[in-house]
Image 1 (cartoon, helix red, strand yellow):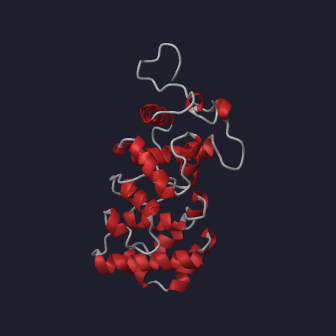
Image 2 (cartoon, one colour; image 1 turned 90 degrees about the vertical axis):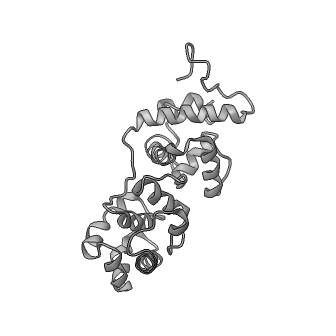
Length: 230
């Protein structure tokens, strides 16, 4: 925490324009505090295999994790892997995922991804960013989630609405485009923290700094180093 007695390399309180070095020091302090508050954080999506995480992440677009998590049990009981999913009738997949919204596009992406995994990757979800991005319906957010969470190989930062909002509120990025926000965060945080950072910011966004009501600054342990509060 900031205050009297803090080490010399403590992140300074924000006064006017912040230098890149000061922002990076503050980012390190943010990461330290987030890790302490959310020590065991991980994705809220339920999954057992990389393919299941891939499918659940596709389903999570414009949908809450709670809603998405109701779909996988019957979905994967019927079609547990890429082989079964690729062979499934598209209309039946649509019916199973209807409750997540945009169900036609999502069902098409899931079936198409399953087929490409069979045809091009020997039935295994690819474990590189470039190959994941070849799958239908998979952009950087989904690929980063699979790489960091399923394969423990953080190659980027998952930027959803929570991460983007908190990055801007915390003065870590001024960008609106998720890819540009991701690039800003990757410059400020160490690569081995990228996956944890995403999960922590999502947890913090839900619990303390939401979009639809005023943030709980009085109880926020980041308030003293947040430009929205200072």
